[in-house]
Length: 101
Image (spheres, rainbow, N blue to C red):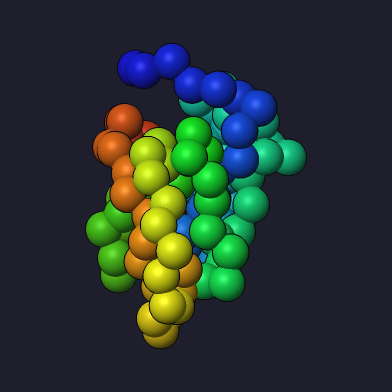
């Protein structure tokens, strides 16, 4: 597993699965991220270079969380539900299984 910076924000994308939010946060925290740094991703505010994205994958029935590091943020016109995240480039780091309910 790549080294992480636990002091960086982690933007959580639930793709409408708010029922899995608590389980996703627990999975992210289990890998060394700080719970208070896990925030809901909003289309109106993209993260910064060095921050992380935690995405429930694969919609609509995710079974893991994909962790990515933001590598570039370009200014864009917000678009739909993606919003400002449209201008974000990222690298895949690792995945975390959600486990059984």
